[in-house]
Length: 282
Image 1 (cartoon, rainbow, N blue to C red):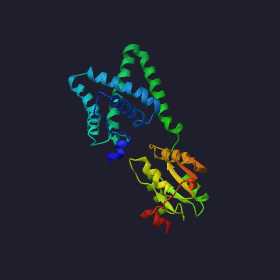
Image 2: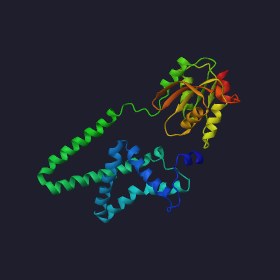
Image 3: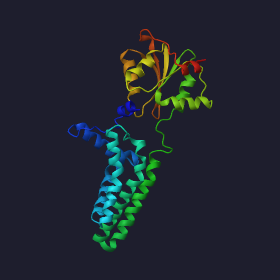
């Protein structure tokens, strides 16, 4: 797991004298507001500003309320320190607990904005505040609709069916490691029924291991690859193209792609003898 999270750049560099340290902080700061809140560039640009306004309000308030600033930012600081010592990664699904804490800070910032408009515009502030509230509510409420619902990050069913309808019995299938659990789920519920030879990828910090798993196969091979959050799939495709392997077919759908390659150009292919591959093949 340390190898996996290191590859995902989830550990903060320890040396503040190097650019990687600040690049990491900027990237994770953007990740919090872009991915965690889920409102795209609105979250990435405006929510940090509103949160800072919330800190301004708390700092200018009574001494007791100033401590709330520390309450809001302390979990982030602690997790960054833990990540620097490779004890707890700082990555999207592992910072979900911070969401309600940050929401409190953003809410305080919005309240501060409303107070400013009230002090500056007096009676007119009611109309301004109501208009602002309506526009913000409509935008946030419609964001999910315009970005598609349900939200699909990696959906393999369409690619599975594409392969199932076109794969011949003598063509092997390689399943990228990210997609193995989903593949087995749909196999176990009889959504797919393959009689082909199946090779399963497994995680490795070395991308060459992914390629070696594929090059053990021979003839025409279907590749079920993931396009989300990994360079392993690109590494496989790029190297097969460099080796003059012919791409015969391809299908892409929601970050899960199906490719048919002729691996005849590869030399000395070695059959995969992994237990799962042989079980499903039998």
